[in-house]
Amino acid sequence: MLSRKLNQLFVKIFVWFWCMLLLVVAVVIALPTLDSRIMRQLDPRSVSILNTIAHNISSSADRYSNIPLQVLITPKEAQTKHFYLVRMNGDIISSSKASKAIRRFILQSEEFPQPKVKQYKNWLMTGPIPIKLRGEKFQLYAAQQLPAEHNIWLINVLDRPFLLLFITMFVSMPLCASLAWHISKPLQKLQRTASEITDGNLDAVVPATQRQDEIGELARSLRTMMFSIREHISLQHRLLSDISH
Image (cartoon, rainbow, N blue to C red; front, top):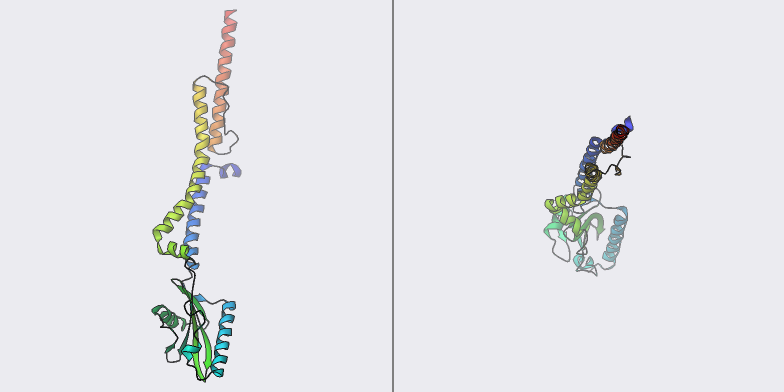
């Protein structure tokens, strides 16, 4: 009895609707968490790399005391990587001008005790790492340029709600089509079989009789009706044959 109720079309459509709704809600909730532009805690491996860089800068500052700090922290890949030293009073030391994005990141990261990471366009900003250079305390930040294609598809989707809606509709279309096919295909076959019976073909094969839903019940009812008509016609033929003799 329970199995029969679970196979009803109403239950199937109801379950499909809620599954689709839960899928859309899950995607809407999950996508923002994948946005690398949201400030999050820096992973331990990256923290270890930044600590190593801070140690190397500190050693170089002690070894080359006459070299300005902005020169000392200039990396070899100056076009794609920048380091920033922030004094306790907020002054920024760097070989390149600090952009508004890195300044905003520095202000935001000061609220958290652990190093953070955030993406702005195609730049990945990390920090801070405490560092002491020539007797003065600093906070070390790093900014690295990412490949142009890095997460660009996800960012485009998140920045364009209509594109996200279109993708959701595009993904749900096969599921909707499969449900429509699951319901309409056997009904079309039953309609053709009913037309054959109407035309006098009482030996037609009735499809979908093995289904346990309303379509299966309709198919079995159609088959029973066809057998009844065939039996009724057979009885009429026997009656006419008996009368003629």
